Length: 235
View 1 (cartoon, helix red, strand yellow):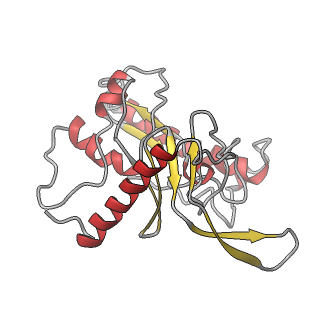
View 2 (tube, rainbow, N blue to C red):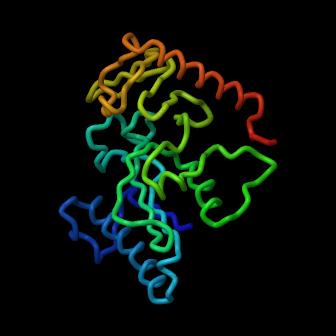
């Protein structure tokens, strides 16, 4: 497990990387991050371990002040897609066909069950694992990892998705004005977004799909009740 602490505020790049990228200091840092991964790959290749080593590259959240969230609403700290969507790359020549893109929703908590599957290690029997294995989806490129995907802020569950629709419970929403030193809190929602038709989460479709909203709201409440009853997930 190797966790880069950059790119992160305050930004800092090694002298040899300054000015290396057209994306400014942020881009220079990403170039250095790429070099670090390359050194690991080179060592694995030199020692004959690369083909049968599972390499996963991902991140814990979307971009903060810098970086590109594309057309998605929100940034780091937000449960909107711009704060949640991250790169996810898997390299394992001995176990996976390369050069493919799998357009399926998954969560970071799905990594552990996936690695347990691929390494033939038993899952713990004394607790419930939050995630589901991605193995079948990554090997075949079709299907879904889970029935539902959960969006937390700390320990609080605020939204749930079935892979296409995403339901937000009513929650505080901060409205700020550029140049002002304060933001006003409002209670907004519930909302329902169709992530396939509207990945930027611009248009609430709860009124036109009340049945979907009802199902996802029920799953959100079920999950909250389950967690409240057994916070640590012990069996």
